[in-house]
Image 1: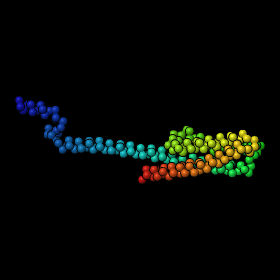
Image 2: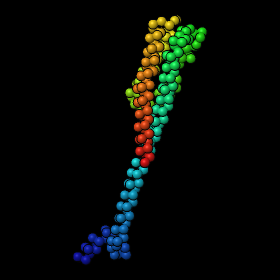
Image 3: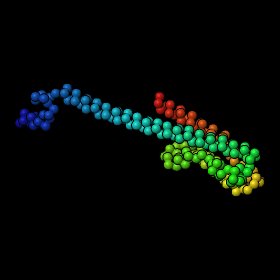
Image 4: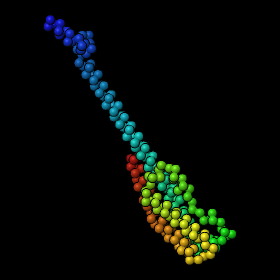
Length: 196
């Protein structure tokens, strides 16, 4: 009876033996292989996940940098235009006041990048202060241009408007462009860090 009971208890574990003899080496090896495979899959998936995150971050930073460089060039060109308008006003104010000499379209800011940014998810990766200051600069210039165009001659309102535009350009040059330069340098450093 005792002999039969030992056999009955051993039967459920028969799969652990080869040829009726327990083979612990075989099962230990199989266990090590299984654990190694599970650990390898875990480490590989973790490394892949980290690479995917770094690539996404690199792509986002690169897009932001490119957008900021393009926007900076546009704002810089517009500042130069406004400075030229302000400088040339005293020499030929009637260019602003008489439609026969110059159409209103000749006094237009370039805003292709600014308008295109509305459709980009990268826009809000830029500094909110920079975006706000650019919007304000464009707005001040447009408001003062409207006042200038409404005047039929170079009067006090016209002179004040041209002075306001020149002041807006001066502030934009010192504030906006400097801040954008700092942001571009920071983005370049972050991109370099990701590549190292």
